[in-house]
Length: 379
Ligand SMILES: Cc1ncc(COP(=O)(O)O)c(C=O)c1O
Image (cartoon, rainbow, N blue to C red):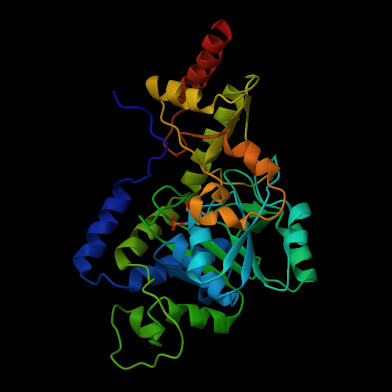
C-alpha cells in the first residue's frame, strides 16, 4: 500500500467534465474560461472584475507585482528568508537584491519588529506573506512601510479563501498575489492571479501577461485575438490557458466544500496531536482561515529521524521551506537577525494536508507520531 501523500488535488467529475469541454472548444489560449474564472474570483473576494488579472503561475504573479512596485536593477526588496524560492528568484530576475528578514516564532510570518532597520534608500518593496494556516500581521507591516513610502507586495499564495478582520484576503492591500498551483487551496493545475486597486495597473498587467501586446481584452475574452496591436512596455508570456481557467471555475464552484474539509482537517489534527511533547503545533490566528499546509515543528534535533520514521510507517511528509539564506546563491542576502528562521528551519515538517484527507487518516498519522516519540523515549 502506498503512503499517505503530502498533497492530493481535489478533483471530481466536475473538473473532468469541464476539462473535456474546454479541450473540445479547441481554443487553448486566453479566452472565455479565463474571463469567467476571473469573474468568480472577483465575486468571491468582493471586488470588481477588472481588479483580477489571472496569470499562469503564482511566480509570474509575484514577478508582475514586483514590476508594478517598479523594482529594478540595483534595488533592494525585503522579504522573509523563510519564503518560497519563487519570490526570491523573481526579485533577482529583476536585477534587484533580496534582503532577508526574520519571522515570528508563532506564525512564521515576517516579524514587523525586525524589518524597519533593514529599510534603506534602495528599498523598493517589502514582501509580506501568509504561511500555512496563519495570516501575517499585514496592518503592522503596511503601517511601517507607509512611514517609509515603500510599497508592500502581499503574497497571499497560502491564504486564498481566508479573511482578516472580516475582510477577504485580496480585498485589501495595493498589490496582492495568489497561486493556484497543484497543491494550493484551489488549483488550476498551474495558475495565479494579481489583484490591484488601480485601473491603469490592471490594464498594464493585462498587457504584460501577453508579451506587452496591447490587445483588446473584450476580443480575447470571446476566444479570438486581434492581429494589430501596439507594444509600449515590457511583457512576458504569462497568460492563463483556457483549460486551466476552466479547472479554476470548477474549483470555485466547490469552494465551500474545500473550505469545510480543510477546516475539518485542521481541527482533527489539532485535537489528535494535543499534548505530544516534542512537537509544536501550528497556530490558526484568525477566526476565518482556510487552512492550507499543516506544518508542525519537531524539537530536539530529531526532524530527519522523524520524517524517516513516518515514511517507513506509511506517512509522507514535506519541508516548506528551507530558508533561502542557506542557498549558495543567496548567502549574501542576510543582513539582520535571522535567529528564529535559523531555529525553525531545522524543525518544520509538513504533514499530509488536503481536503480529502479523512479523519481516520489523521488519527493514524497522530498515532504514528506518538509511536515515534514512544520508541525514542524507550531507546
Ligand atoms: C508564498 C508563495 N509564493 C509564491 C509561490 C509560487 O507560486 P507557483 O507555484 O504558483 O508559481 C508559492 C508556491 O508555493 C508560495 O508558496
